[in-house]
Length: 323
Image 1: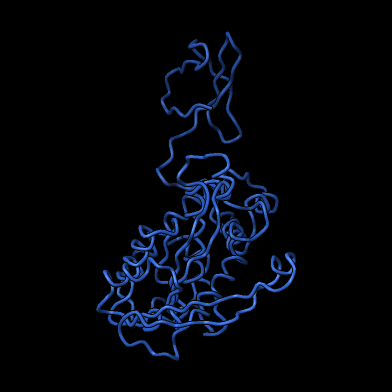
Image 2: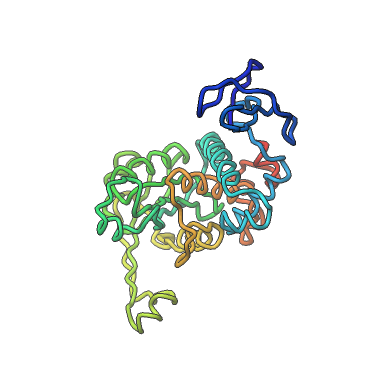
């Protein structure tokens, strides 16, 4: 299908012959026909960069399904919109949600932050990538670094990448920009945290790590489908003076469960995983924007953004789409 907007007679892309007018399509756009090879096509009007083809109410329906755990194809079946249209909408809205969060998450007054990484994969699992000698850097394991405030349940920073020092450093840099003043920080035992936190937040944090050891009792089926039992936990003060009673990672681990329930790409043992890194990043941005601004949190009886003073009322999906 051609995308030219000029009114002059176009030429056929296949045989370069001049075309003749051939009526109009259902949207009123001019159709053309090549006489030698009989091809027909439409001339579509140019659209502004980043514009949306779907009506606002249909886009709200599609996005509402995606943030409630529906897959792309299930949203396609429910709404009747093609999966390519849904993916283009997700890419557009996801990019704008990430920019919105970057504007809002600056200089927040938070006092007790927990951080963790949640695993998924893109395109294929890491063992398959190694077996096939795949060279695509975006294929294989994908870790999302997430920070959550214990009191407001707000997620001030997140970062998608590999479980390495580069992603950890970028994540902690985002956290430094998002949180103002001194605060307590608790992470798991990932060995890339101390250097990054010490470099970016060393004088502003009371930093401790909490390492939990899980049991492996039971059969293989029980270990796969049931949560493991915690045998012991060990807390270590890295620097500062953290409150021992508040050295905890339970809230961020509960947030991991929320992601696996609300984000289809993170659901275990399904075929709804991401095939493209950009789509995974857009889905994450949409999820975190909806979680912070729209989703009513039962423990605080409001949205995290309201508790943190970023909003006065809960946002609707229409508000998020308009913003």
